[in-house]
Image (cartoon, rainbow, N blue to C red; front, side, top):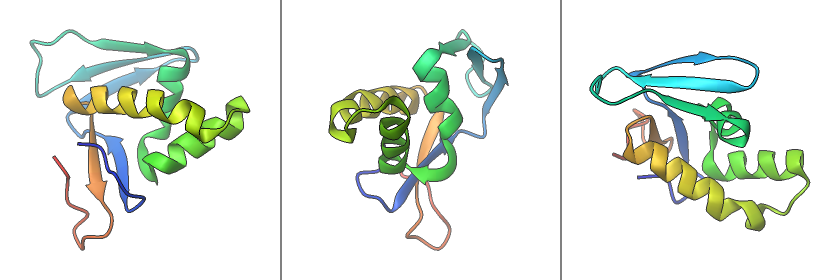
Length: 106
């Protein structure tokens, strides 16, 4: 589940190995080796790079909005859907920074 409030961050799962190039990011879920690798490019790869655990989803959207010169509300639904898909696949996890341990919201 992705965080609904600004108190949660989204970060890459510790079970995911990834290789980056200028244009793409290849992801492999080590906990689900039967699944094929996922290759992200363009904006998807850029979003992946922002999911380093230092930003909330709202901050990721705000960063992208500035970078692409659009209003946050225009891109927010697409970013949320993309991150929700990554979460469903186990590639990223949401963490609540308001809890002492920063526990996962899975």
